[in-house]
Amino acid sequence: MKPSAEIRIGKKMAGLGLTVAIAESVTGGLIGSRLTDIAGSSLYFLGGVVAYSNDAKVKLLNVRRETLARHGAVSEPTAREMAEGVRKCFGTDIGLAVSGIAGPGGATKEKPVGLMWLALCAKESTRSRSIRLSGNRLQNKAGAAEEVLKLLEEYLDSLTS
Image (cartoon, rainbow, N blue to C red; front, top):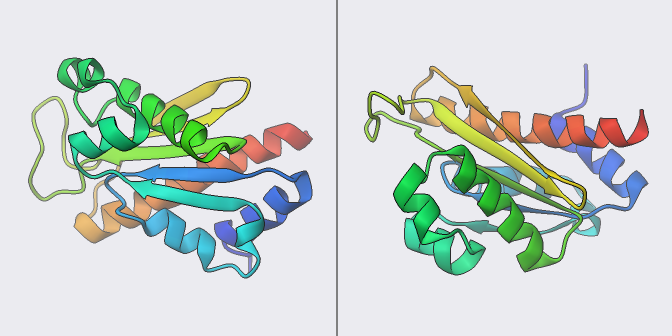
């Protein structure tokens, strides 16, 4: 059986000597919980911010009000600013972020239930991508957490290839 993403990430993070912090909105702390399920995670996981409201995104992560007004909370620019903000806040090598619509409400024609924006900020760049999940609320939250961990693992793999 293949080890879980958090186990694989833990080994890679510790091996590379890197640190990470997470800005979570839609997942409500689920990613931080998964990472801290692993003994020794304090070596690389420095903390997280659950910024569910727009005010929290602005005050805690330095997301610009203009970004939220123009693009909304569930958008590429917001996810990128969240990742950059949490990296700066904790002084980590990597900042991760996720914002999305878990459902069943909150969707619009342009932003359907299951739309998630993920971002990873490292010293050299910020990368982002959107995904579309099709489960219920809890499935969408779990799927978003899994995809953020996948994004982190892909980045870590790129450093060693």
